[in-house]
Structures are given as C-alpha cells and as structure tokens.
Image (cartoon, rainbow, N blue to C red; front, side, top):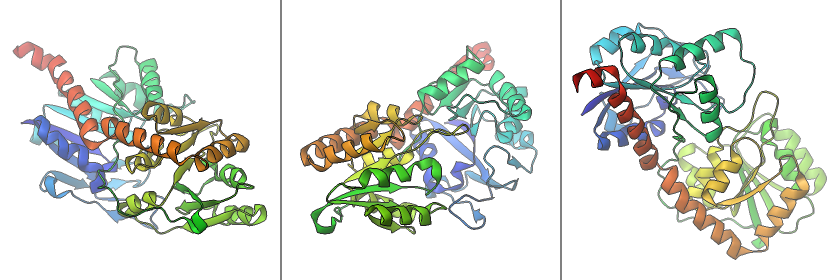
Length: 376
C-alpha cells in the first residue's frame, strides 16, 4: 500500500471522506488531516470533525484559525513534522490553488520532493488580491497535477501554468441507496423542486416568476436563507403554490429528491461568482430525477455531459417556463431524462469513479517524480 497524505477541509464531514475510503481499493493507504472544528452557512456555530468508520486511526484533526474561511484558514501546526513522520509517497491537497492552506502545505511537500496534487474548482477568471496570487503561483509551480473540478477550472489552471497536468476529477455524489418514497403531488400536480441556500445568486425569483401562470405546479424549496421572506411574498403576489422545507438534514436528502418530479437550479452569475458545479444537479440525477438548469457556470457541462435535463438562459423566466411546461406535459420525457442522468452520473460522479480518476492522477505523479525516476 502506498501511503497518501490528504489535506482536506471538506473531509471534516464523513460523507466527503468516501473517495479516500475507496482509494484503499486502489492500493493507497490514506491519512487525512482535517480541521478539528469547522463552521459553514448551515450551522450557527462551529461543529466538530467526523471520521468515517473505515478511516479510524487515519484522520488527524488539527486546530485551524479562521475556521469556515475556505480561502484563508490555516493549520496551527508545523506541517513538515507530520510529513516527516508519515513519509508519504504522494499527497493531495483538497484546497483551492489560491488558498492559504494549500500554500502552507505545498511548501514543505515541495521541499521534500514529495509529489502532490491540488484541487481547482474556481471557474471565474477574476482579479485576485495580491496574496492570493502569490499563493496560487507558489502552489501550482511545484504541483504534479491539478484535480480540476470542471473543464473551465482545468483551462484556468493551465492558463496559470501551461505544462501542468489538469485532469477533470469532479466532486462525488453520495452513494445513497434508492429511495422507496415517491413524489408528493398536491392535487396530482407537478412538484418542481430546488435544494440549497435561498440566496440571490441562486436565481429563485426567476423560478417563481416562471411558475406563475402554469397550471398544476407546486414549487418546493428545500433549504433556508436570507431570501426566504422575499420569495414567499413574491409567490403570494403571483399566485404560485410554494412549499418551504427548511430543516432537512443532508443524510435525508435522497428522500427529499425522490419527492420531486423535476429539480430546477436557476443560478444567476454575478461579477464575483458563477456556479462552479451545481452539486444538487448530480444528487438529484443520482436519485433518477430530471433537472433543469440555467446557463450559469458549469451547469451546462453537468447537464449536457449526463443527458439528464434541459438548459435555459440564466435569468430568462420565459425560457424556464417553457422547459417546465415541456416536462410537465410529458411524463415519458421526464422518465427518459431521469434514466439517462442517473446512469451517467453513476459512471462519472460516483465515489468509485472519482476515486478511480484520482488514483490514476496520483499514480502518474509518483511515476513522474524524480525519486521514482532515479530509482528505476
């Protein structure tokens, strides 16, 4: 087994450790470093790390400053000491190229000649602050590969360093078992669902505007956020039947998706943000639910590569209304899209598929490393 060091703030949750569990089937012995405590928009305070049962004894929780700040948090420790203790053959930094944590760990790895990969999800070419540009330049300069979460992210990484390997290794979808629950259809109507934060950039006002005037439609929003009251008022004004489900835990989302007939992700690009992936799209398709997404960011790539749904121009309520009406009026079309999306998502975005792609990139990195070349 090859020892692998993984640095990952997402892996503070056990569900995000699953690809590293799977890597053990590919000959890797992963050791994870995660924040001891973290915070995110779904929690009022900080919460402790978790450990997947298969990784007991292989997850090191360390204190970080600026917990919850994806780009700015750093670990309160000397990374080199742990690296020397573990002596890994390779490392993977599940942190953005511009992040302080990636910079903090890439330097001692590079100094010791240990090949490492780093994540790139950023898909918007924007002017970064000076320190972020410094972090990116240093981190990518010695990286053996960049695990690009989308084709656009790969292009941006190779713009920063043209010779770097930048395979597309997407985020994974949880391996939820099939749900036996069926869609809740008020008065036999169509349930059009959304899951995520109720924030302006998700474009939910476009969804409610599109639903206005469509017969037999219920809009069900699973999530919470600052837009909740405004969306409720808009729906009441336009006569849209709106249901809010603010308190569904992530481990119960498979059942929530099973109660949708269609999932809509109407994200709207801003000067500083565009949809980097659209995780709810692949989660819904995993559950056999067809999707409709806007043209923001990577949404078209996800939908077109899976064949699991329809794409409309972001912000265009009329185009979204047409797409919803098309699927409302054709159960056969919904089944066709749901089946195609489910099959392709399992092939591309499953834990097994993501781990296989990551293992391939890590193996190539080790084979290309100077230490491997000199010993051959």
